[in-house]
Amino acid sequence: MNPLRKLLNQVLHVLAGGSFLAMTALTCWQVLTRYVLKNPSSWSEELVSYLFAWMALLGASLVAGERGHMNIPLLMDRMGPAARKSLAVFSEIVACLFAGIILVFGGIQITSLAMGQMTSSLGIAIGIFYIVLPLSGILNIIYTILNIVEILTGKISLDPVNETIQNAQKIGKEA
Image (cartoon, rainbow, N blue to C red; front, side):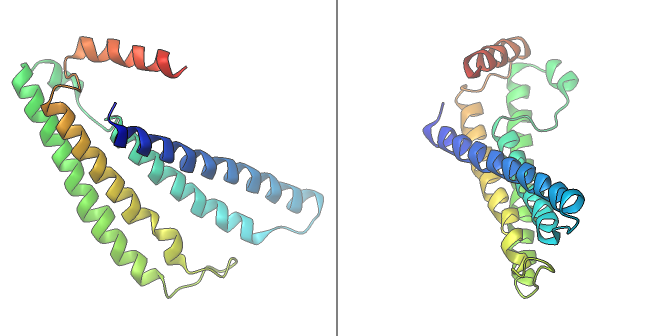
């Protein structure tokens, strides 16, 4: 595995997992303050919603790195190896363009606009929480470039039978 990919995967697992753990703890805090202490915590509910967005977008970057995004295997399985490779590269280019235009460019625009607005309970600029949009876009671009290089060099198998075997072996190693 590419050392850059391995590092990004580890960092994203920690960030997405950390967001999930923080969301769980904050949700338990909300339940405690609302039903036991009879004094609901408003800031924790707001923070959980922002952490959910961070977790989802960072998780989506992990999915892009694993090439787990939407595809149509029925079409790919009927193609020859050269056509499979071309279509795989094309789909990565489309994902890269989406990440660059929507997540990076659009994310920078919305983040800069939201820097002047404050959250209602936390008193923090909303743009701080929106930084995950361009960050996720940059990560997706890095992953799609790595995917394209590995598709072209044959490190990523596009053979449906071999890919299933490789995925099963990968899951076995991770367990």
